[in-house]
Length: 326
Ligand SMILES: [Zn+2]
Ligand SMILES: [Zn+2]
Image 1 (cartoon, rainbow, N blue to C red):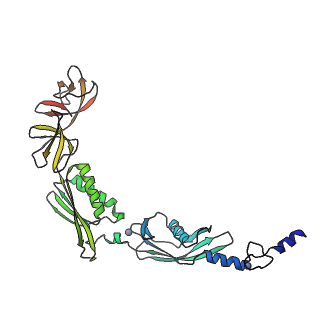
Image 2 (image 1 turned 120 degrees about the vertical axis):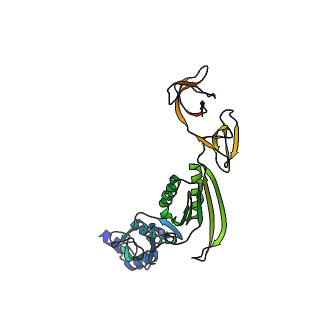
Image 3 (image 1 turned 90 degrees about the horizontal axis):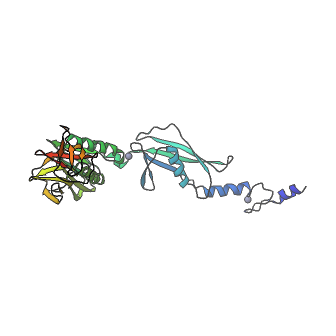
């Protein structure tokens, strides 16, 4: 029969063995597979506090440990080898100090399965280790501060704790508070966000490389000073008998004079009164603008002009009985 003679004709291209079923004889096939798989032990280190694993000198966040194991196992198998990788995991508890040995199944086909040894180790990472220590990379100095700002800072730090951001020391006096913080990069960014959100004086001063007493390593440290002024960009203030719409805050505050429309500036230490903005409806736009007084509901004239139409709602301030659209 022709088919049998053809079958007998097939031989292993590696060793020349005749009468094989696949592309190689079973002995050569095993050798090839063994050279494709590197039987290097799979060792995965995980920080169970911030749920990250260490991969190629980096810390990577993860949700599913099986996905992590598959990814790491793939590194231990030579490329161009298509395999189904399935970790055979025991019950896992994410706690520092736990260590699990298990196997990873590598299936080249439903019949050809290999098992690689693997270890999963739980260790606190360096960042998480800083919690509850005296480690710090910078001091946040809040001056003339409010509960709103302090709450904002605490919540924000809590949100970043998985990235190793903690307050390791605090000192409060009056409405000033100093916070020792574990990440200088985070602290600088926080300072900028505080300034944008609340307005005030921001000073970021690096204190280049001071030695950390606990680790005796050199650390880059930074001081972030944030003093609140009680007003922010967009607010209307009165100083030196001028009404000013603030456009930027800092040691020098800049803004626009409401009466003249001209740019102006003043020192943040000057005496400043913040004026309350109210919503009012424009009731007349020609020949003069009139608005409805938000308290008396009487139409009143405004001191400055704006391109607006009757029926629109505007922000107004009242100063010495006079009304201004701001
Ligand atoms: Zn062979
Ligand atoms: Zn961690």
